[in-house]
Length: 139
Image (tube, rainbow, N blue to C red):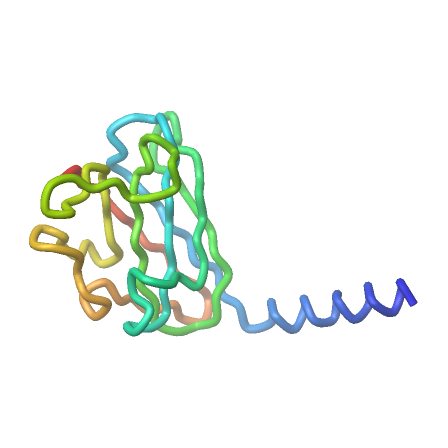
């Protein structure tokens, strides 16, 4: 019975990975190495900045860019990243709900007057994958 369950799980995992493309995210601009980077991936404007389909929390690289990897089906996505400097798991804000931690979005979408919409952050993962560079900016 256990073998059957393991075989079923392995077949299901293989089916999930089939058709997945590598997405590599490279992040620069963290003001220091304390805390972590929180990288959230979205695939639809209706869930943008509300309900990511995947999130990675990765330590800030001591030198050079910090990288994160996702395996996703080909399609359109948006990424939002913030430097969780105090490692509390949330984007800290100050007056007028403006972020006090460094933030960045795919497509270098500007967050000057509030978060960008999904259309400005959208990018395409094609068969063969994609590489996205995100530069964090401190508000």
